Image (tube, rainbow, N blue to C red):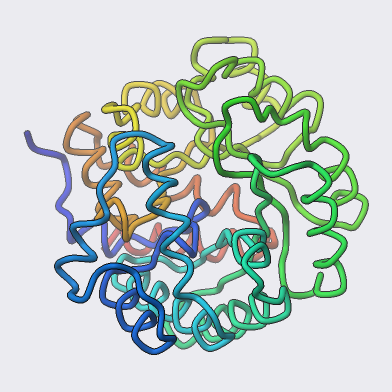
Length: 337
């Protein structure tokens, strides 16, 4: 199959990445390096062995690989180095702005101080300008942990509120509906933080979860969320309220054997501010331009549709209106050359 544009065109197209888990950028070479530095036995001794361990066929099996890998992250320098490694990759993918998820509970639960985590990541995002990227952090709660744990994490984080711009919700959605975290998200809103939540694809009660997220909790964005096409009223709601969706087609294909490309294109054609992102690129072997190209190739996207995906990414980013216009103008200059 062919697409209307080349991978090189898509790599050069200015874009924002809004659905990226920093812990999911832990490439095998860096994982092995940090394991050796920190004296941690990960059960592998070569990059090839680490790469081979990155195998899964569902969300639970992915998480069973994903969380143990984080044990190699021990020091502030480790979190900083992980961030810089991502920014170098993102620069090659045409990313100009990035809003990056991090999961503090995955680290504090194994004894890493919150201060170590936030300071390491924040040092990294501050250096984004060295790679032509403005970057910010989004603190995510793990939904398969208790609501009380989320509340404790937010309380611990608020003294560092100047170092992150919003909160999110990720991990295993089964049995962990958005409503479980309504109170902590209300506290986040009261403290001036932006809010987004994962509504993972093809989950139990997916439409009800999406409804809770947008009507009850009133998030600013939805992560994944493509099952919304099953309910036109909810599609109309997100359109009316300019709530964007941060989709990840390649990672979708790993966990459910379906990119959800048909749904993404349908939402795009209805004017929903849908975007394409890479999710956990070290594990899915696909960074943001690769995701856009894979979607464009399989679903025959036009050049105009690809450009609209890039424009959407800036339009729903948590940046000033002035910055949005600057980035949109950069897209126009690039596509008119």
